[in-house]
Every structure is written in structure tokens, then in C-alpha cells.
Length: 182
Ligand code: PRP
Ligand code: MN
Ligand code: MG
Image (cartoon, rainbow, N blue to C red; front, side, top):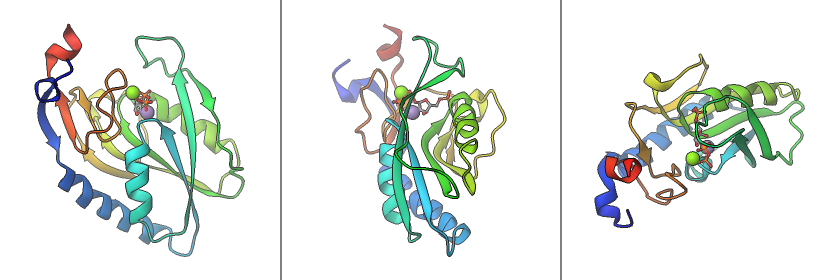
């Protein structure tokens, strides 16, 4: 590891594709929230890129807030038991909340988060995720805005990390097996 060219297997979704999809998603969101104001809730850290790009593509008035959450225990993160590391600064009462995520993998993080947010009295809660892995999903979820359904592979870039690396790649790529198997 360390040599980016060798760490990556291939580009799965290009910068151009991400840009086009962001426009499509923003258009759909704008149409659905006409006359309303949005509260975008980004899930740190993976959602930073999607949040920055989607927020700038929207015409709907939008505030941005952030949550940092973590699964209990290390290693396998798919326990579905989550704790809040940083909560929202915003009161959700009566707000139209759009959760912004980079990826829905097992779906367990988001499932917990939706339950948590809905208990705070918002007018509505929907989700926008740039990526989704249908083959990995372990719980049924209503994700209103999805960018791309992708295969069940190890992906990084555009906010997604492997051990905190590769988040800053402007595209989504698959990681070469030698990086995570050694
Ligand atoms: C990743 C990703 C999603 C979540 C999806 O975050 O950004 O938030 O996992 O996984 P799930 O659908 O299986 O629950 P992670 O916990 O790695 O934190 P990060 O965003 O800081 O990388
Ligand atoms: Mn995340
Ligand atoms: Mg991560």
C-alpha cells in the first residue's frame, strides 16, 4: 500500500458520472421539495463529498448539519448498534430532513439513524445515498434518492475510506485485494 496506482483495481464510477448523477438527484429533490426548506443531514465522515456537491446543485433552500455516529465494538461494524459521537446542532421539530449518505451497505447504520431522527418530531425524513449495495443489504429500507446500485465489492473514494485512506479520490474505485488481504 502507499502507491495509489497499485492500490486501486479499477475506476467503478468516474468523476464525470458522479457529476451527472448529482445533477439528476438535485433535480429530483428540487421537484419534490418545491416551496419547502430542507435540512440536509450529512453522516460524517463518508458523506462529506456527496453533501458538498449535492448542496451546491440544489435550488431548494437548504441548511446543512452533521452527525457522527459509530457502531459499537471494532472490527465487524454491522452490529446495527450505534452510538452518537456528535449529535445535530439543529432541532428537528417540524423540519424536512434529508439524510445524505455516501453508501448504503448493510443498511444497519441508516436503519438505526432513521429511527432516531424520526423520534425527534420532523415534518419528514428521506434519504439520499450516492451508492447502494443491494447484495449486501440486510434490512429493508426506503431510500428515496439513490445514485448508483453497485456490486458487492470493496469500494473507496468520493468520501469512502479504507482505514481512513482514499476518501479524497474524486471518483469511486475498487480496491485491489492485496491492500486489504495483507
Ligand atoms: C460507512 C458509510 C456509511 C455506512 C454504511 O461509514 O459511510 O455511513 O458505513 O454501512 P452500513 O450500511 O453497513 O451500515 P463508516 O461507519 O465506515 O464511517 P465513515 O463514514 O466515517 O467512513
Ligand atoms: Mn459513513
Ligand atoms: Mg468508513
